[in-house]
Amino acid sequence: LRRVLLAYARHNPGTGYCQGMNYIGAFLWLVMKDEETVFWVMVCLLDDICQPAVHASDIRGTMSEYKVLHRLLSAREPKLAAHFAATEVDLVMIASKWLLCFLTESFPAETAARVLDAVFSEGFKVWFRVVLSMLKMNEAELLQSDVLPDTMRILQIAFRDMHDRDLLMRFAFKRLKTFPRASIAEFRTEVAAETKKAQQEAAERAKQQLAKRQEQQREKERVQKATGPGGQ
Image 1 (cartoon, rainbow, N blue to C red):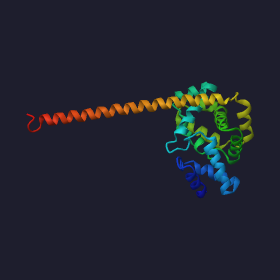
Image 2 (cartoon, one colour):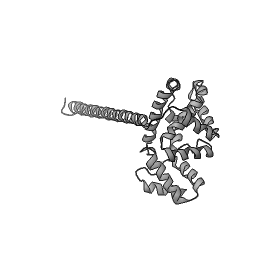
Image 3 (cartoon, rainbow, N blue to C red):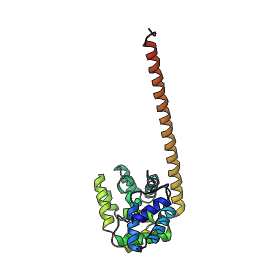
Image 4 (cartoon, rainbow, N blue to C red):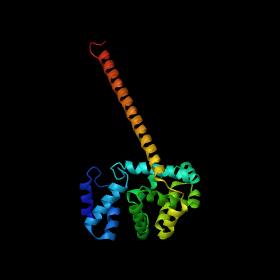
């Protein structure tokens, strides 16, 4: 496993190693038992299927994908989305491992394997399908939770005890409404625009604060010069 992770870090130096990759690599190793195969399957998953920067040092890609997830939830399950907003539940803050570990740490092994099979076959949107399915299947209990620790506990137990992979996948592909890639792409575009705007606003604030500090420093120097020797 160590060799696989080091090889990936060298293969993709822009990303390097990120916490969560070890769970993915270990899970693939348990299934395939061959270092080279595990490496290339891991490359396929992280480089080709996942969005860029999901495993960046600042996990900005993960944060963006969870914003997309919240938008999908609002569009499909507005009642639950509104409850999360009212109780200040941000899923990336309590369950980022769903994506960083690609569910291999959250689901039982047999369920994680089934989900990954579908991901490699259908693409990343399966991740959205599965996570939204889990939220929907546990909606009644989640709506009764008014505090963050209880919500975390409900979700942890729900994922840990999801042994019926057939039930989960039937729900994800039969019970959920149509899941066009165009909707995901649209939400990703919105999130990217909002992120860029926020970065620009932050840069402008930093620029203004710097200018203010510089002006304060110049004023301090003027006062010192005026009140110093020869300035009386």
